[in-house]
Length: 102
Image 1 (cartoon, one colour):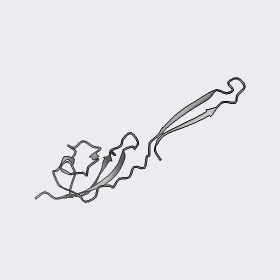
Image 2: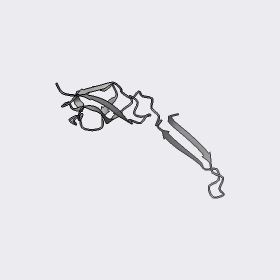
Image 3: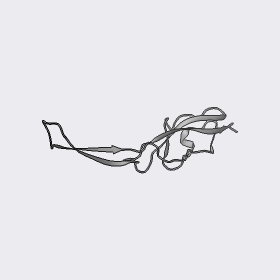
Image 4: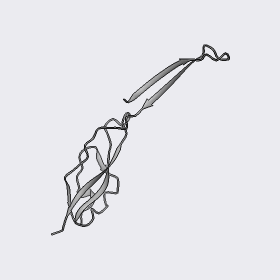
């Protein structure tokens, strides 16, 4: 559960009896729902800029980073939810299948 929660209490200590305190706690839900991108493809010589991610996703590394040699290569992508006030971003490892250049 995320949101802002208010806790109120009354002190019972002899020195401050009857005093009221109020605390506000803002909680972010760390378990934002998202689908990790799959089916990502590139060709040798491409950079991360050449690999399209779904809306809300971006590359952690610079988009000028090479996708690497032919084969399956892993990179970290960041999901940023629309509601960043209540939800945190998430980092996930995604695979890019890199084909040999023609």
